[in-house]
Image (cartoon, rainbow, N blue to C red; front, side, top):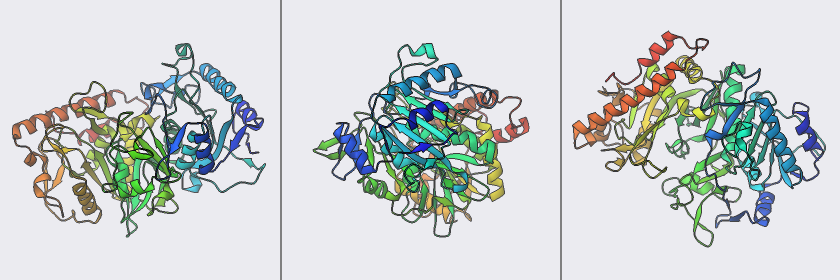
Length: 543
């Protein structure tokens, strides 16, 4: 039996240490067997476990809360993203979870976050379902086996009960019967009513996004990272669907991680021990590393089958957000440990469905901070109900749902670190060219890979650049293994006037989004009006 240390709240310590029906630190094989025995999943022809997460096939950001108390009132950037809940309602909901789990056979795991051991955050994960625990094994870092009856030092606890649905949720400050709540004082995350496993990993990501910059001067980042043969680190920022996982999985570079990292004074380090990749339309031809990683131990979510146990990756009937988690060692070419030197290149990825942004452009410092704060990509028809034409989406720092502090806090940190290390920053459009979504075509992956390779190997250093008329972006006029005509996006449009109108339309959306960020800057913010003016210099031209 494992016991946990006294940093954990007394009620949770009592619940865990007196519960004899917790199965601790089961192997992936044991968790797979429990899942199948419970008729909650099946094995695919590659040996991966396939499960359905239920009603929720993605995160529920409107149902994520942070406990507002004396420690968080003045530090959290409260609003529609960081929604407050009071301590009284949190305690009631926590007790509901504890009482719900007491009568069940449950699963416990000791894990940690941060591959840089000096920043290690120990985690105790308690789950109702075995496959939720397998997700924890895959995604968090795995400590060496501890001896029986050895007390585990615990920093944060996660209680996950997908089967619990709260009646009369509005009485407790909730929007509906599911929730994910972070308590920074108790160091506890409680999740109920949703089986979507991403709530587990993003809960800890939110914790690190609060603790590391305020206590350690470490910049937390929603990005992937890899290392080249010359020991050069590259970072890939981007929202879901822009290509973070795909573009960082490069057979010629060692993978540090695919989603969450910290930038300290000495290194880039992975927060996680695994990868969580989108599966829709996955193929070996386009993404061989990810495709090959889906084997024994991997956990597939909400996929469909062709026949028997062969996965149909083209089927999005359950959700477009089909997913797979697997431990990072399923990728052959990885950094071990998941730590690298400070970066040489940063890539901001955007899937521009308006078809107006260049496939690659070089950013100056002001543009870097502006586009980092903007965090632009776009939604397209078919991905969500009601979307009939391209829709701009802005997510500050390329991950606002997980950022408890004001976005300018992170932007200023990035600007300072970028200047200190003289990092090259590039904006990469992995979206459309030759017209907007439905008219133009998606920029070919082989061209995007070629442009990124050229940037990382300094082949874009001594060439001519052209400034984009609307966005002021510096576009290379040539790039190895890429057709010249696609480098300036207006060249790919038949109707040049339509291109200019679409570019102006998108620029206006950028301006509107930034105005809302400017207006939310508090007087006590760590960023000055002079800083804001400099950031505005990186914005599109005034229309």
